[in-house]
Amino acid sequence: MNTRHVTSLVAAGAAIVMLLSGCGSTGISNSSNASDSNIISVYGSEPAHPLFPGNTTEAGGGKVVDQLFAGLVTYDARGGIHNEVADSITSSDNATHYVIKLKSGWKFTDGTPVTAHSFVDAWNYTANSANKQASASFFSTIEGYDDLQKPDVDPKATLSGLTVVDDNTIDVKLSQPDSAFPVKAGSHAYMPLPESAFKDPKKFGQHPVSNGPYKFVSWQHNHSIEMVKNPDYKGNRVAKNDGLNFKIYTSPDSAYADLRGGNLDFTNMIPDTALTSFQSDKSLKAYNEPGGNTLTFTIPEWLEHFGQNEEGNLRRQAISMSIDRKTIAEKIFHGTATPAVDFLAAPISAYSKELKGNEVLKYNPSKAKELWAKANAISPWSGEFGIAYNADGTAKNWVEAICNYIKNTLDIDAKSIPMSTSDEFLSNVDSGKMTSAYRSGWGPDYPSADNYLVQLYDSSSADGKGGNSGNYKNPAFDAMMDKALSAPSTEEADKYYQQGEEILLQDLPAIPLWNQNATAASTSAVSGVAFDYGGGPVFTALTKKP
View 1 (tube, rainbow, N blue to C red):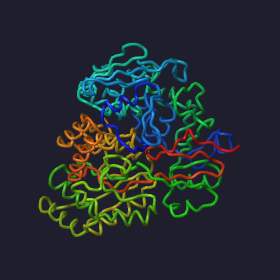
View 2: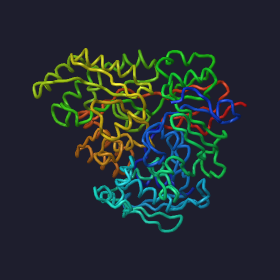
View 3: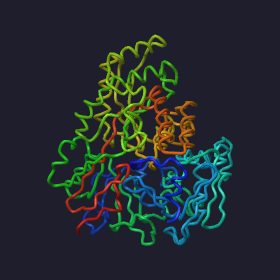
Protein backbone atom coordinates (compact mmCIF):
# COMPACT_ATOMS: atom_id res chain seq x y z
CA MET A 1 0.00 0.00 0.00
CA ASN A 2 1.29 3.37 -0.80
CA THR A 3 2.38 5.28 2.30
CA ARG A 4 0.93 8.64 3.30
CA HIS A 5 0.93 10.73 6.44
CA VAL A 6 -1.34 13.13 8.24
CA THR A 7 -0.76 15.67 10.95
CA SER A 8 -4.40 16.07 11.93
CA LEU A 9 -7.63 14.17 11.38
CA VAL A 10 -10.66 16.07 10.14
CA ALA A 11 -13.46 14.01 11.67
CA ALA A 12 -16.48 16.27 11.58
CA GLY A 13 -18.50 16.30 8.38
CA ALA A 14 -19.11 20.04 8.65
CA ALA A 15 -15.40 20.78 8.90
CA ILE A 16 -14.68 18.69 5.82
CA VAL A 17 -17.37 20.38 3.81
CA MET A 18 -15.98 23.80 4.66
CA LEU A 19 -12.60 22.63 3.41
CA LEU A 20 -13.84 21.10 0.17
CA SER A 21 -16.59 23.42 -0.96
CA GLY A 22 -15.56 26.06 -3.44
CA CYS A 23 -12.66 25.49 -5.18
CA GLY A 24 12.70 -8.92 -10.06
CA SER A 25 14.91 -6.85 -11.89
CA THR A 26 18.54 -7.78 -11.61
CA GLY A 27 19.62 -4.33 -12.68
CA ILE A 28 19.16 -4.90 -16.41
CA SER A 29 18.33 -1.59 -18.03
CA ASN A 30 15.64 -1.09 -20.66
CA SER A 31 14.42 1.63 -22.99
CA SER A 32 13.81 4.08 -20.14
CA ASN A 33 16.99 3.79 -18.13
CA ALA A 34 18.79 6.07 -15.71
CA SER A 35 20.65 7.88 -18.49
CA ASP A 36 17.51 9.21 -20.24
CA SER A 37 17.19 12.99 -19.91
CA ASN A 38 14.35 13.36 -17.43
CA ILE A 39 12.82 9.88 -17.15
CA ILE A 40 13.35 8.92 -13.51
CA SER A 41 14.11 5.27 -12.76
CA VAL A 42 12.81 4.27 -9.32
CA TYR A 43 12.64 1.20 -7.14
CA GLY A 44 9.59 -0.99 -7.69
CA SER A 45 8.28 -4.43 -6.76
CA GLU A 46 5.97 -6.65 -8.77
CA PRO A 47 2.32 -5.68 -8.11
CA ALA A 48 0.30 -8.41 -6.44
CA HIS A 49 -2.73 -7.84 -8.69
CA PRO A 50 -3.62 -6.34 -12.08
CA LEU A 51 -3.63 -2.53 -11.98
CA PHE A 52 -7.24 -1.93 -10.92
CA PRO A 53 -7.26 0.83 -8.27
CA GLY A 54 -9.96 -0.89 -6.22
CA ASN A 55 -7.94 -4.08 -6.00
CA THR A 56 -4.67 -2.44 -5.00
CA THR A 57 -3.78 -2.69 -1.32
CA GLU A 58 0.01 -3.18 -1.34
CA ALA A 59 3.03 -1.02 -2.04
CA GLY A 60 4.12 -2.56 -5.35
CA GLY A 61 0.86 -1.76 -7.07
CA GLY A 62 -0.05 1.22 -4.91
CA LYS A 63 2.90 3.34 -5.99
CA VAL A 64 2.03 2.71 -9.62
CA VAL A 65 -1.73 3.28 -9.36
CA ASP A 66 -1.14 6.48 -7.39
CA GLN A 67 0.75 8.01 -10.31
CA LEU A 68 -1.72 6.88 -12.99
CA PHE A 69 -5.04 7.91 -11.47
CA ALA A 70 -6.61 11.08 -10.07
CA GLY A 71 -9.56 11.03 -7.68
CA LEU A 72 -11.99 13.50 -6.19
CA VAL A 73 -9.42 14.97 -3.78
CA THR A 74 -5.69 14.97 -3.09
CA TYR A 75 -3.72 15.32 0.13
CA ASP A 76 -0.82 17.67 0.74
CA ALA A 77 2.34 17.00 2.77
CA ARG A 78 0.62 18.02 6.01
CA GLY A 79 -2.48 15.93 5.42
CA GLY A 80 -4.58 18.81 4.11
CA ILE A 81 -7.35 17.91 1.67
CA HIS A 82 -7.70 19.65 -1.71
CA ASN A 83 -10.23 19.21 -4.50
CA GLU A 84 -8.92 17.54 -7.62
CA VAL A 85 -11.63 16.19 -9.94
CA ALA A 86 -14.23 17.30 -7.39
CA ASP A 87 -15.44 20.88 -7.50
CA SER A 88 -17.24 20.46 -4.17
CA ILE A 89 -18.36 17.79 -1.73
CA THR A 90 -21.18 18.86 0.57
CA SER A 91 -22.98 16.92 3.28
CA SER A 92 -26.31 17.04 5.07
CA ASP A 93 -28.44 14.92 7.40
CA ASN A 94 -25.70 14.28 9.95
CA ALA A 95 -23.13 13.18 7.35
CA THR A 96 -25.42 10.53 5.85
CA HIS A 97 -26.03 12.37 2.55
CA TYR A 98 -23.39 13.84 0.24
CA VAL A 99 -23.63 15.67 -3.07
CA ILE A 100 -20.50 15.68 -5.20
CA LYS A 101 -19.98 18.21 -8.00
CA LEU A 102 -17.27 17.43 -10.56
CA LYS A 103 -15.12 19.81 -12.56
CA SER A 104 -15.70 19.63 -16.29
CA GLY A 105 -13.02 19.03 -18.91
CA TRP A 106 -11.24 16.05 -17.36
CA LYS A 107 -10.56 13.10 -19.64
CA PHE A 108 -8.89 9.72 -19.62
CA THR A 109 -5.74 8.94 -21.58
CA ASP A 110 -7.86 7.30 -24.30
CA GLY A 111 -9.62 10.67 -24.86
CA THR A 112 -12.96 9.69 -23.27
CA PRO A 113 -14.42 12.10 -20.70
CA VAL A 114 -14.30 11.63 -16.93
CA THR A 115 -17.91 11.89 -15.77
CA ALA A 116 -20.05 11.03 -12.78
CA HIS A 117 -20.54 7.60 -14.33
CA SER A 118 -16.77 7.08 -14.35
CA PHE A 119 -16.77 7.30 -10.57
CA VAL A 120 -20.07 5.58 -9.79
CA ASP A 121 -19.43 2.66 -12.15
CA ALA A 122 -15.98 2.15 -10.62
CA TRP A 123 -17.34 2.27 -7.06
CA ASN A 124 -20.11 -0.20 -7.88
CA TYR A 125 -17.60 -2.56 -9.49
CA THR A 126 -15.27 -2.43 -6.49
CA ALA A 127 -18.03 -2.81 -3.90
CA ASN A 128 -19.65 -5.82 -5.60
CA SER A 129 -18.22 -8.98 -4.01
CA ALA A 130 -18.60 -10.91 -7.27
CA ASN A 131 -15.69 -8.87 -8.64
CA LYS A 132 -13.39 -9.84 -5.74
CA GLN A 133 -11.85 -6.40 -5.28
CA ALA A 134 -9.68 -6.05 -2.17
CA SER A 135 -10.97 -2.57 -1.30
CA ALA A 136 -14.68 -3.39 -1.26
CA SER A 137 -14.96 -2.47 2.43
CA PHE A 138 -14.13 1.18 1.65
CA PHE A 139 -17.79 1.47 0.53
CA SER A 140 -19.32 -0.27 3.55
CA THR A 141 -21.18 2.83 4.76
CA ILE A 142 -23.01 3.44 1.45
CA GLU A 143 -26.61 2.23 1.21
CA GLY A 144 -26.88 -1.15 -0.47
CA TYR A 145 -23.39 -2.36 0.41
CA ASP A 146 -24.60 -5.37 2.44
CA ASP A 147 -26.68 -6.58 -0.50
CA LEU A 148 -23.57 -6.60 -2.68
CA GLN A 149 -21.81 -8.93 -0.23
CA LYS A 150 -24.29 -11.79 -0.59
CA PRO A 151 -22.82 -15.02 -2.05
CA ASP A 152 -25.22 -15.10 -5.00
CA VAL A 153 -25.03 -11.39 -5.87
CA ASP A 154 -25.48 -10.42 -9.50
CA PRO A 155 -22.12 -9.10 -10.79
CA LYS A 156 -24.01 -6.16 -12.30
CA ALA A 157 -25.79 -5.23 -9.07
CA THR A 158 -25.11 -1.70 -7.81
CA LEU A 159 -25.08 0.32 -4.62
CA SER A 160 -28.59 1.65 -4.03
CA GLY A 161 -27.15 4.75 -2.34
CA LEU A 162 -25.41 6.01 -5.49
CA THR A 163 -27.22 8.11 -8.08
CA VAL A 164 -25.80 9.82 -11.16
CA VAL A 165 -27.78 13.07 -11.30
CA ASP A 166 -26.01 14.35 -14.41
CA ASP A 167 -22.54 14.11 -15.96
CA ASN A 168 -21.04 16.28 -13.23
CA THR A 169 -23.15 15.42 -10.17
CA ILE A 170 -23.20 12.38 -7.87
CA ASP A 171 -25.72 11.88 -5.06
CA VAL A 172 -24.53 9.61 -2.24
CA LYS A 173 -26.80 8.23 0.50
CA LEU A 174 -25.16 6.43 3.42
CA SER A 175 -26.57 3.77 5.73
CA GLN A 176 -24.89 5.39 8.74
CA PRO A 177 -23.09 8.65 9.51
CA ASP A 178 -19.60 8.74 7.98
CA SER A 179 -17.78 12.01 8.50
CA ALA A 180 -14.64 10.47 6.98
CA PHE A 181 -16.32 9.85 3.61
CA PRO A 182 -14.84 12.94 1.88
CA VAL A 183 -11.41 12.04 3.27
CA LYS A 184 -11.62 8.52 1.83
CA ALA A 185 -12.56 10.00 -1.55
CA GLY A 186 -8.90 10.41 -2.54
CA SER A 187 -7.94 6.78 -1.91
CA HIS A 188 -7.27 4.17 -4.58
CA ALA A 189 -10.68 2.58 -4.05
CA TYR A 190 -12.46 5.77 -5.13
CA MET A 191 -10.58 6.39 -8.38
CA PRO A 192 -12.65 6.68 -11.61
CA LEU A 193 -12.51 4.12 -14.40
CA PRO A 194 -13.29 4.49 -18.12
CA GLU A 195 -15.84 2.31 -19.90
CA SER A 196 -13.05 0.16 -21.35
CA ALA A 197 -12.26 -1.14 -17.87
CA PHE A 198 -15.58 -2.97 -17.69
CA LYS A 199 -15.65 -4.15 -21.30
CA ASP A 200 -12.39 -6.08 -20.90
CA PRO A 201 -11.20 -6.07 -17.24
CA LYS A 202 -8.39 -8.55 -17.94
CA LYS A 203 -6.88 -6.36 -20.66
CA PHE A 204 -7.38 -3.19 -18.62
CA GLY A 205 -5.56 -4.60 -15.59
CA GLN A 206 -2.46 -5.15 -17.71
CA HIS A 207 -2.70 -1.90 -19.68
CA PRO A 208 -4.71 0.66 -17.67
CA VAL A 209 -6.28 3.79 -19.12
CA SER A 210 -6.09 6.54 -16.50
CA ASN A 211 -6.57 10.24 -15.76
CA GLY A 212 -3.65 11.05 -13.44
CA PRO A 213 -0.25 12.75 -13.72
CA TYR A 214 1.17 9.94 -15.87
CA LYS A 215 0.12 7.85 -18.85
CA PHE A 216 0.79 4.10 -18.83
CA VAL A 217 3.30 2.77 -21.39
CA SER A 218 4.16 -0.84 -20.55
CA TRP A 219 4.37 -3.52 -17.88
CA GLN A 220 7.05 -6.13 -18.40
CA HIS A 221 6.25 -8.47 -15.55
CA ASN A 222 9.02 -8.88 -12.98
CA HIS A 223 11.11 -6.37 -14.91
CA SER A 224 9.63 -2.87 -15.19
CA ILE A 225 6.56 -0.64 -15.38
CA GLU A 226 6.96 2.46 -17.54
CA MET A 227 4.86 5.60 -17.73
CA VAL A 228 5.22 9.05 -19.27
CA LYS A 229 3.90 12.45 -18.26
CA ASN A 230 0.22 12.90 -19.12
CA PRO A 231 -0.08 16.14 -21.15
CA ASP A 232 -3.84 16.32 -20.52
CA TYR A 233 -3.69 16.06 -16.73
CA LYS A 234 -5.53 18.98 -15.07
CA GLY A 235 -4.90 18.34 -11.37
CA ASN A 236 -2.72 19.32 -8.42
CA ARG A 237 0.22 16.97 -9.01
CA VAL A 238 1.77 18.10 -12.30
CA ALA A 239 4.94 16.10 -12.94
CA LYS A 240 8.27 17.92 -13.06
CA ASN A 241 9.83 15.00 -14.91
CA ASP A 242 9.03 13.40 -18.26
CA GLY A 243 8.09 10.02 -16.87
CA LEU A 244 8.85 7.19 -14.45
CA ASN A 245 10.37 3.76 -14.90
CA PHE A 246 9.56 1.49 -11.95
CA LYS A 247 12.33 -1.08 -12.18
CA ILE A 248 11.14 -4.23 -10.43
CA TYR A 249 13.53 -5.85 -7.97
CA THR A 250 13.37 -8.97 -5.86
CA SER A 251 15.93 -7.60 -3.42
CA PRO A 252 16.44 -4.08 -1.99
CA ASP A 253 20.17 -4.88 -1.92
CA SER A 254 20.20 -5.26 -5.71
CA ALA A 255 18.38 -1.95 -6.10
CA TYR A 256 20.81 -0.21 -3.76
CA ALA A 257 23.76 -1.63 -5.68
CA ASP A 258 22.22 -0.33 -8.92
CA LEU A 259 21.73 3.08 -7.31
CA ARG A 260 25.39 3.27 -6.28
CA GLY A 261 26.39 2.08 -9.74
CA GLY A 262 24.31 4.74 -11.51
CA ASN A 263 21.80 2.27 -12.96
CA LEU A 264 18.91 3.50 -10.77
CA ASP A 265 17.99 7.08 -9.91
CA PHE A 266 15.97 6.69 -6.71
CA THR A 267 14.95 4.14 -4.09
CA ASN A 268 12.81 4.40 -0.98
CA MET A 269 13.74 0.88 0.13
CA ILE A 270 17.03 1.05 2.02
CA PRO A 271 18.26 -2.49 2.73
CA ASP A 272 19.23 -3.51 6.27
CA THR A 273 22.82 -3.85 5.13
CA ALA A 274 22.97 -0.12 4.28
CA LEU A 275 21.10 1.44 7.22
CA THR A 276 24.31 2.22 9.09
CA SER A 277 26.05 3.77 6.08
CA PHE A 278 23.57 5.24 3.59
CA GLN A 279 23.41 8.65 5.29
CA SER A 280 27.19 9.04 5.19
CA ASP A 281 27.71 7.69 1.67
CA LYS A 282 29.18 10.65 -0.24
CA SER A 283 28.24 9.14 -3.61
CA LEU A 284 24.52 9.48 -2.84
CA LYS A 285 21.92 11.85 -1.47
CA ALA A 286 20.26 10.37 1.63
CA TYR A 287 16.92 11.15 3.29
CA ASN A 288 15.58 10.16 6.71
CA GLU A 289 12.39 11.86 7.96
CA PRO A 290 9.45 10.97 10.24
CA GLY A 291 6.77 8.96 8.45
CA GLY A 292 3.39 7.33 8.80
CA ASN A 293 4.24 3.66 8.26
CA THR A 294 3.55 1.05 10.91
CA LEU A 295 5.22 -2.36 11.16
CA THR A 296 3.31 -5.25 12.72
CA PHE A 297 2.89 -8.98 12.42
CA THR A 298 -0.50 -10.67 12.24
CA ILE A 299 -1.51 -13.87 14.02
CA PRO A 300 -4.67 -15.00 12.18
CA GLU A 301 -7.46 -16.31 14.35
CA TRP A 302 -7.72 -19.60 12.43
CA LEU A 303 -4.37 -20.84 13.78
CA GLU A 304 -4.59 -23.51 16.46
CA HIS A 305 -4.19 -22.00 19.96
CA PHE A 306 -4.80 -18.46 18.61
CA GLY A 307 -8.57 -18.12 18.35
CA GLN A 308 -10.30 -14.95 19.55
CA ASN A 309 -10.78 -16.41 23.03
CA GLU A 310 -9.02 -16.37 26.39
CA GLU A 311 -6.27 -18.76 25.35
CA GLY A 312 -5.59 -16.93 22.09
CA ASN A 313 -5.49 -13.51 23.76
CA LEU A 314 -3.12 -14.74 26.50
CA ARG A 315 -0.76 -16.20 23.91
CA ARG A 316 -0.79 -13.06 21.76
CA GLN A 317 -0.05 -10.88 24.78
CA ALA A 318 2.74 -13.24 25.91
CA ILE A 319 4.36 -13.18 22.48
CA SER A 320 4.12 -9.38 22.32
CA MET A 321 5.78 -8.98 25.73
CA SER A 322 8.56 -11.36 24.68
CA ILE A 323 9.91 -8.83 22.16
CA ASP A 324 12.48 -6.16 23.00
CA ARG A 325 11.39 -3.56 20.47
CA LYS A 326 13.85 -0.92 21.66
CA THR A 327 16.92 -3.11 21.25
CA ILE A 328 15.85 -4.36 17.82
CA ALA A 329 15.19 -0.77 16.69
CA GLU A 330 18.69 0.24 17.79
CA LYS A 331 20.53 -2.80 16.44
CA ILE A 332 18.67 -3.35 13.17
CA PHE A 333 16.92 -0.09 12.21
CA HIS A 334 19.71 2.26 13.34
CA GLY A 335 17.60 5.32 14.07
CA THR A 336 15.02 4.83 11.31
CA ALA A 337 12.24 3.33 13.46
CA THR A 338 10.72 3.88 16.92
CA PRO A 339 8.95 1.28 19.14
CA ALA A 340 5.17 1.25 18.77
CA VAL A 341 2.95 2.41 21.65
CA ASP A 342 -0.40 2.01 19.85
CA PHE A 343 -1.82 0.97 16.47
CA LEU A 344 -1.35 4.37 14.80
CA ALA A 345 1.58 6.37 13.50
CA ALA A 346 2.82 9.32 15.53
CA PRO A 347 1.55 12.06 13.15
CA ILE A 348 -2.10 10.91 13.51
CA SER A 349 -4.08 13.10 15.91
CA ALA A 350 -5.56 10.09 17.76
CA TYR A 351 -2.08 8.68 18.44
CA SER A 352 -1.45 8.27 22.17
CA LYS A 353 1.23 6.98 24.52
CA GLU A 354 -1.29 6.74 27.36
CA LEU A 355 -3.71 4.05 26.20
CA LYS A 356 -4.96 1.63 28.83
CA GLY A 357 -3.36 -1.77 28.26
CA ASN A 358 -0.36 -0.60 26.23
CA GLU A 359 1.95 -2.43 28.63
CA VAL A 360 1.50 -5.43 26.33
CA LEU A 361 3.78 -3.59 23.88
CA LYS A 362 6.62 -3.39 26.42
CA TYR A 363 9.36 -5.97 26.88
CA ASN A 364 8.54 -7.98 30.00
CA PRO A 365 9.84 -11.57 29.78
CA SER A 366 8.69 -12.62 33.26
CA LYS A 367 5.13 -11.46 32.58
CA ALA A 368 5.26 -13.12 29.16
CA LYS A 369 6.17 -16.47 30.77
CA GLU A 370 3.33 -16.04 33.28
CA LEU A 371 0.75 -15.37 30.55
CA TRP A 372 2.02 -18.28 28.44
CA ALA A 373 1.68 -20.60 31.43
CA LYS A 374 -1.94 -19.44 31.96
CA ALA A 375 -2.65 -20.24 28.32
CA ASN A 376 -1.07 -23.68 28.70
CA ALA A 377 -3.40 -24.37 31.63
CA ILE A 378 -6.31 -23.87 29.24
CA SER A 379 -4.80 -25.94 26.42
CA PRO A 380 -1.19 -27.26 26.40
CA TRP A 381 1.01 -25.80 23.66
CA SER A 382 2.18 -28.02 20.82
CA GLY A 383 3.98 -27.42 17.55
CA GLU A 384 6.07 -24.45 16.44
CA PHE A 385 5.46 -20.73 16.04
CA GLY A 386 6.42 -19.25 12.68
CA ILE A 387 6.38 -15.79 11.14
CA ALA A 388 6.26 -15.65 7.34
CA TYR A 389 7.66 -12.77 5.30
CA ASN A 390 8.57 -11.91 1.71
CA ALA A 391 12.27 -12.41 1.11
CA ASP A 392 12.41 -9.67 -1.55
CA GLY A 393 11.73 -7.01 1.10
CA THR A 394 13.59 -5.79 4.19
CA ALA A 395 11.95 -7.95 6.88
CA LYS A 396 14.45 -10.81 7.20
CA ASN A 397 16.61 -9.47 10.02
CA TRP A 398 13.85 -8.14 12.24
CA VAL A 399 11.64 -11.21 11.78
CA GLU A 400 14.54 -13.45 12.75
CA ALA A 401 15.31 -11.25 15.77
CA ILE A 402 11.68 -11.43 16.93
CA CYS A 403 11.63 -15.22 16.57
CA ASN A 404 14.79 -15.47 18.67
CA TYR A 405 13.22 -13.38 21.43
CA ILE A 406 10.06 -15.52 21.40
CA LYS A 407 12.07 -18.74 21.41
CA ASN A 408 14.33 -17.65 24.26
CA THR A 409 11.58 -16.12 26.41
CA LEU A 410 8.84 -18.73 26.03
CA ASP A 411 11.07 -21.76 25.40
CA ILE A 412 9.18 -22.78 22.27
CA ASP A 413 10.28 -23.52 18.73
CA ALA A 414 9.93 -20.20 16.88
CA LYS A 415 11.27 -19.60 13.39
CA SER A 416 11.09 -17.24 10.42
CA ILE A 417 9.48 -18.51 7.21
CA PRO A 418 10.78 -16.75 4.06
CA MET A 419 8.64 -16.68 0.93
CA SER A 420 10.55 -15.83 -2.22
CA THR A 421 8.56 -12.89 -3.62
CA SER A 422 6.05 -10.26 -2.54
CA ASP A 423 3.64 -11.64 -5.12
CA GLU A 424 3.72 -15.14 -3.60
CA PHE A 425 3.53 -13.79 -0.05
CA LEU A 426 0.62 -11.40 -0.69
CA SER A 427 -1.32 -13.98 -2.69
CA ASN A 428 -1.27 -16.27 0.34
CA VAL A 429 -2.23 -13.42 2.68
CA ASP A 430 -5.08 -12.19 0.47
CA SER A 431 -6.51 -15.67 -0.04
CA GLY A 432 -6.40 -16.56 3.67
CA LYS A 433 -4.01 -19.46 3.07
CA MET A 434 -1.39 -18.51 5.63
CA THR A 435 -0.62 -21.35 8.05
CA SER A 436 1.51 -19.21 10.37
CA ALA A 437 1.76 -15.66 11.63
CA TYR A 438 3.02 -13.22 8.99
CA ARG A 439 4.72 -9.88 8.52
CA SER A 440 2.27 -7.02 8.15
CA GLY A 441 2.11 -3.26 8.42
CA TRP A 442 0.38 -0.24 6.96
CA GLY A 443 0.92 2.97 5.09
CA PRO A 444 -2.31 4.94 4.99
CA ASP A 445 -4.43 5.53 1.88
CA TYR A 446 -6.00 8.69 3.30
CA PRO A 447 -5.34 10.97 6.26
CA SER A 448 -7.52 9.50 8.98
CA ALA A 449 -7.24 7.16 11.95
CA ASP A 450 -10.19 5.46 10.26
CA ASN A 451 -7.77 4.16 7.63
CA TYR A 452 -5.48 2.51 10.19
CA LEU A 453 -8.28 1.08 12.33
CA VAL A 454 -11.51 0.53 10.37
CA GLN A 455 -9.81 -0.73 7.22
CA LEU A 456 -7.56 -3.14 9.14
CA TYR A 457 -9.63 -4.40 12.07
CA ASP A 458 -13.35 -3.70 11.55
CA SER A 459 -15.55 -6.69 10.71
CA SER A 460 -16.60 -4.98 7.47
CA SER A 461 -12.98 -5.28 6.26
CA ALA A 462 -12.71 -9.03 6.94
CA ASP A 463 -13.48 -12.03 4.71
CA GLY A 464 -11.51 -10.70 1.75
CA LYS A 465 -13.38 -7.38 1.56
CA GLY A 466 -10.54 -5.19 2.88
CA GLY A 467 -7.29 -5.09 4.80
CA ASN A 468 -8.48 -7.21 7.75
CA SER A 469 -6.57 -10.24 6.47
CA GLY A 470 -6.57 -12.02 9.85
CA ASN A 471 -10.41 -11.96 9.90
CA TYR A 472 -10.57 -10.30 13.32
CA LYS A 473 -14.15 -9.59 14.40
CA ASN A 474 -15.22 -7.89 17.63
CA PRO A 475 -18.62 -6.14 17.80
CA ALA A 476 -17.42 -3.91 20.65
CA PHE A 477 -14.57 -2.60 18.49
CA ASP A 478 -16.90 -2.12 15.52
CA ALA A 479 -19.26 -0.09 17.69
CA MET A 480 -16.45 2.28 18.72
CA MET A 481 -15.53 2.85 15.10
CA ASP A 482 -19.15 3.68 14.27
CA LYS A 483 -19.21 6.20 17.11
CA ALA A 484 -16.00 7.80 15.83
CA LEU A 485 -17.50 8.23 12.36
CA SER A 486 -20.58 9.87 13.87
CA ALA A 487 -18.60 12.24 16.11
CA PRO A 488 -19.17 16.00 15.60
CA SER A 489 -15.53 16.95 16.20
CA THR A 490 -11.99 15.67 15.79
CA GLU A 491 -11.46 15.60 19.53
CA GLU A 492 -14.53 13.47 20.21
CA ALA A 493 -13.74 11.13 17.31
CA ASP A 494 -10.23 10.63 18.66
CA LYS A 495 -11.63 9.53 22.03
CA TYR A 496 -13.64 6.78 20.35
CA TYR A 497 -10.72 5.73 18.19
CA GLN A 498 -8.57 5.45 21.32
CA GLN A 499 -11.23 3.41 23.13
CA GLY A 500 -11.28 1.12 20.12
CA GLU A 501 -7.51 0.79 20.31
CA GLU A 502 -7.75 -0.25 23.94
CA ILE A 503 -9.92 -3.16 22.81
CA LEU A 504 -7.30 -4.03 20.19
CA LEU A 505 -4.59 -4.00 22.87
CA GLN A 506 -6.48 -6.76 24.68
CA ASP A 507 -7.14 -8.86 21.57
CA LEU A 508 -3.97 -8.07 19.54
CA PRO A 509 -5.24 -9.18 16.10
CA ALA A 510 -1.89 -7.79 14.93
CA ILE A 511 1.08 -7.06 17.17
CA PRO A 512 2.40 -3.49 16.79
CA LEU A 513 6.18 -3.33 16.55
CA TRP A 514 7.59 -0.06 15.19
CA ASN A 515 6.75 3.16 13.40
CA GLN A 516 9.06 3.58 10.42
CA ASN A 517 10.72 6.74 9.20
CA ALA A 518 10.59 7.75 5.56
CA THR A 519 14.01 6.77 4.24
CA ALA A 520 15.28 7.09 0.69
CA ALA A 521 18.39 7.65 -1.39
CA SER A 522 19.05 9.06 -4.85
CA THR A 523 21.94 9.74 -7.15
CA SER A 524 23.54 13.18 -6.95
CA ALA A 525 21.85 14.17 -10.24
CA VAL A 526 18.34 13.86 -8.77
CA SER A 527 16.64 16.76 -7.01
CA GLY A 528 13.16 17.54 -5.73
CA VAL A 529 12.96 14.58 -3.32
CA ALA A 530 9.96 15.10 -1.04
CA PHE A 531 7.61 12.94 1.01
CA ASP A 532 3.84 12.95 1.30
CA TYR A 533 1.82 12.95 4.53
CA GLY A 534 2.46 9.22 5.08
CA GLY A 535 6.17 9.34 4.35
CA GLY A 536 5.89 8.05 0.80
CA PRO A 537 7.93 9.66 -1.97
CA VAL A 538 6.29 12.34 -4.13
CA PHE A 539 7.34 10.97 -7.51
CA THR A 540 5.93 13.89 -9.47
CA ALA A 541 8.42 16.22 -7.75
CA LEU A 542 11.50 14.28 -8.85
CA THR A 543 13.72 15.68 -11.56
CA LYS A 544 17.35 15.23 -12.60
CA LYS A 545 20.11 16.89 -14.47
CA PRO A 546 20.64 15.64 -18.05
